[in-house]
Image 1 (cartoon, protein in one colour):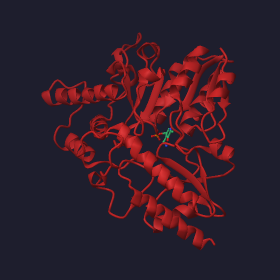
Image 2 (cartoon, rainbow, N blue to C red; image 1 turned 180 degrees about the horizontal axis):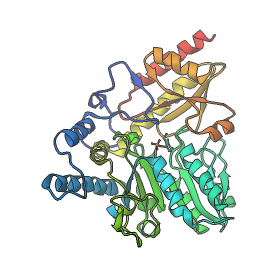
Image 3 (cartoon, rainbow, N blue to C red; image 1 turned 90 degrees about the horizontal axis):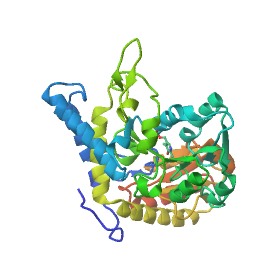
Image 4 (spheres, rainbow, N blue to C red; image 1 turned 135 degrees about the vertical axis):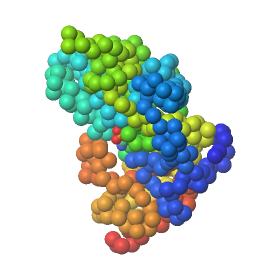
Length: 405
Ligand code: PMP
């Protein structure tokens, strides 16, 4: 495996680390889910085949060892995002569950007339939980507009926010446009009116270095599977004082202090939010994935993906009928349309050319409405992609335009 690289060295060449990427297949759907390096597959296999046992409950050595490994993964996640303490890290199934947890637990403090600010480019996972909360509490949702080039318009956010706003919830990197939020400025704007801020880090955490203390946010969420780790495990980070004041959201084993029919008391955070037997081996896989990404270095990853985006935008914009969406400095993601061709047809023809892209609304229907389309085609890059993949994409798109005249 690679050792740490500086951002200005040669492009990454790590595709050999990924057993599920055959030669000649351009996998350009990392924004949906990242392929897994062999060492992550090995960590998962070892977790089941050699060291498997439950955590937190066993009185035997194997279980005690697994608990140590499971908690070491939590500590690794904390250092990866520079959390103050591993007790601020809650294991969840993914970003979707993390946002629902915040909405259902922290959200209980909201009352009728309180306001929540989202943006036009949010993923449905960062819209619908807040709509459910608004329906329960009478809170009101506001929507921040986008700039011409597809960024969340923070100047507009500054004018929209009022003391009635209790929460601002925004994507760090758009899963459709790749636009990067100035999350620190967004946090400052939220805090200036006394609101909390949740950052959806699904697309950022594998693309740019994240430091939750420097960003000064209150909640940060992401999924392991977009970070070269397993599915079924993700992270809610919340500032310790906030997390400790939040009520439980799911009841069951492992989240309690004492249970009786007279009344139950709960474990301190993060255990209070982790009812039931967790995704034990998932945590081990995520630990290894974080080590893998950190060994390469997020600066090197960002530089690599930026070079691919620049090349892709240049090649695609030269193809007649192709329109690009989003800003030129997008993080690893390029959305586009081909005039007169449905994105699903684009995706199908590209698949015949061994180029895998995503086509659809990307769980961002409000953004599609804003762009005036029902769907886009999206190419998204990861550490394993190369300029050859960009070439393959451009060649395949040439074929699309030839077929459709
Ligand atoms: N937010 C963003 C920006 C995403 O890209 C995604 C996944 N497409 C999610 C939230 C939801 O993540 P998951 O499905 O892993 O819970």
